Image 1 (cartoon, rainbow, N blue to C red):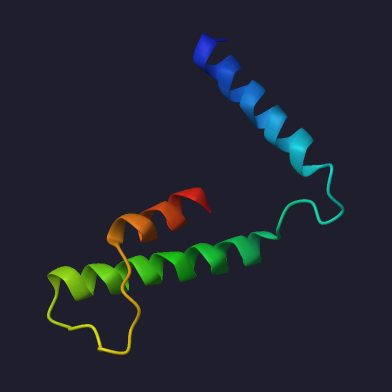
Image 2 (cartoon, rainbow, N blue to C red):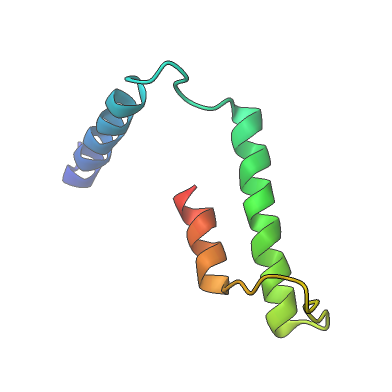
Amino acid sequence: MTNSHNDLKLMQERVDNFISQFEEGYFSPLAMTARMTEELGELAREVNHYYGEKAKKSSEKEKLIEEELGDLFLY
């Protein structure tokens, strides 16, 4: 095995050990897909407000594309 493969395996084991401490464990695949879809939709909405034709309503909270990307990647 390559060194990077060993590093990835070690990281996966550490994450699994951490999550296994909690009764809930991992989220179901359906829940993870739904949450990621929701986060991607929020990113798309901000991109559309910034670069697209749809202006943000004055009542909508200001959000940054960087923050939405962070939510998506860190989820």
